[in-house]
Length: 172
Image: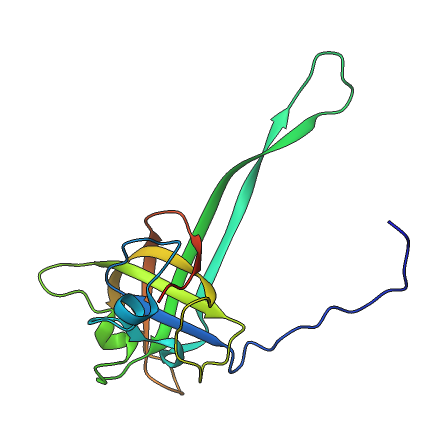
């Protein structure tokens, strides 16, 4: 490849360009249906319930040593991926807010479903076919309500990721 002068790739702000839905059931994680799954009963847009750091998807990938006879340097191979998600959102009685939507139904202490995340598209745009995002199969645990000295009342909730995080292209 011929060397060229440095260019700065364009970047998009997260503010105003991210949507997070809670979807109770999805048939095909690689082709989430915009009209009947994201737009279906029980699915809710939760984006604005979360605090700025309140949808904290993280992870790491292990590196395994790959030692060879008579080789003076230890090589490495990539290993298992570990992902984690913790939630913090505003406490609200609004039926479309995370505090209500993600609350386990008693006597259950957890609730399972899917977070569908659509980045880099205005959150004013309704879900439609050919948009891209990713799906996080998840079980949310008990809601915990810490009391802080000021600000909004919050809910914290732990999440276990129950399957691979999958890139998706929305279907009609």
